[in-house]
Length: 299
Ligand SMILES: [Zn+2]
View 1 (cartoon, rainbow, N blue to C red):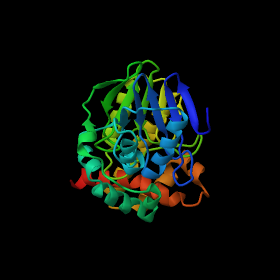
View 2: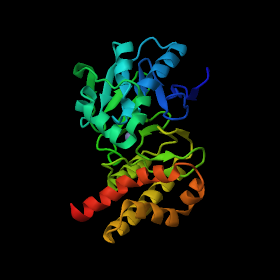
View 3: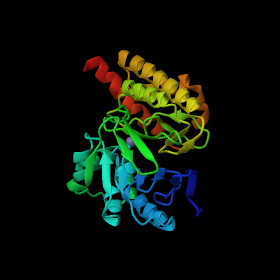
């Protein structure tokens, strides 16, 4: 297979198209029966590379663009795939559909979190309303030779959903079970506000109950021992919830939560010690927990 294409099973391929030259940023997955689906095309700058790799694979028709959720780094390039493949339909959670048509709120949210870095995403454009099909929970998409079950998995966002392919027992979860900090690094919750860690834990349990054998996370890659992954993300989510609750109860601030986490989360502290910008990204990761704890306390 050409570079940056990895076959995971007979009908599933991981496409690693770079964002701004960086590989391993977001995994796009191609699921093929007689019909075909691309899961999470990435932002526009990545979707361009996805389209060229689909061409290398000889793909003529694309039936579905599937969004695990509508955050720009996952689905921002959907408009480009829909343009390239005029027969394709975007499938997303009902809570996300309006923002796929008018992405101005998504842009504002991403700008607040990432500032100028969103320029790396490329053009931010809406999708024609008549090219969207909204999902329902437990729905099945039949690809004639493969199928995908949809399970709503709120927590990371209200519009998160996972796709489960029962023949290969592969599940595509987007950000619902966190991300890894490098190969073999700690599994960290992806928690831009509004993040609901309690719902996230329920969703992790739901995904675990599907008994997947291959866990495809967006950032990044396919994991063949999902059980370990679920254990690690659940225990860190619980720990961070407890720490955020303690900080909020004591009337302390987000910076105090970062310091407390560095003290109490030894695996993480060991991993990020001396890494440039680690404090900043930990602060971003903890913000959703901090705001959730404040919301629980004060409404
Ligand atoms: Zn996300």
